[in-house]
Image (cartoon, rainbow, N blue to C red):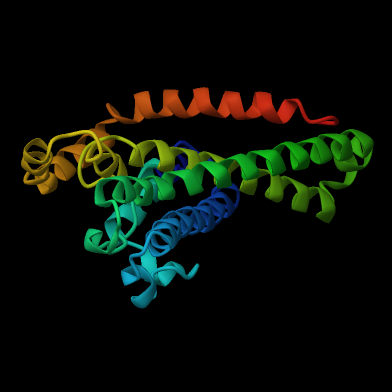
Length: 242
């Protein structure tokens, strides 16, 4: 992500090439984190908990959802989090089940958005390739046209949107606090074990940040994302014309 682009700058890449990519990544991060938290709030509200709705945490407004550290991690590493949506399990008819559904709603929304983004990526990549082939002589003489630049930017935007949403979903499904996976784990763990685990939430989060920085966690998460992305591409490939 941005960390890789900064390394590219240090290795001689042009700022005019790196800066637009950073801007695209920023927009994609805002969309991914916002959709994630809105999905939590929407699911909780549908299951009977109006807390998020009453606190204005359901609308698609990034200012309501962003966590500074989580957003920075998302920008640098491609893995991060937003400000947790408040959930009051006492409103749920079946607290364990409904808490797990609410927790899963965030990653599910990212997976859906990731799939849609990948679909549009394939469409724009095909359009760009066709346009590039048709005007190859003109491009070589006069430089890329405005239309070609737009197609390229759109292609990169949807690629970043796909990648960031998928990594956010997979990262948050790790079953450790305070990630969504720990809330899903609550559905299966006895209370005493779950709450014993939650006591170390802050320590676990600091350890996770350190592992992200070293890349130890990034490698297996990236491998899972690649596997899922290939599966999505296979499904999209079944669509005629793609």
